[in-house]
Length: 125
Image 1 (cartoon, rainbow, N blue to C red):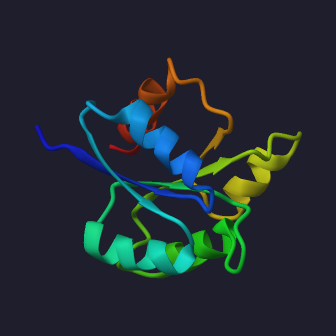
Image 2 (image 1 turned 60 degrees about the vertical axis):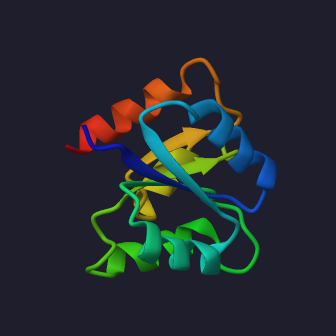
């Protein structure tokens, strides 16, 4: 069985570390990136199946980076999930309209997070 690759893009290191801790020991291979520049480099090298994309980041935000990735033939098929604290009415629709393939709000439920990731990956197949 091939282990699926997940890239967590978040400017808050603790969020990356939490995802690494929650998903460690699972069937995933996980990397972190702290901003858009780091994410672009890691995507080229790591070739993730799924990107958990923080939306509110300094410089290039998550929606802008998502747009760039979806416009590129080499990266447009990567599953990009908005991974954000934005949880107001209409925020999920905004993320999907911005090119994200799904939406997960922070804070995560550590008991169900791995199952949510599996479900998102399965929905893509």
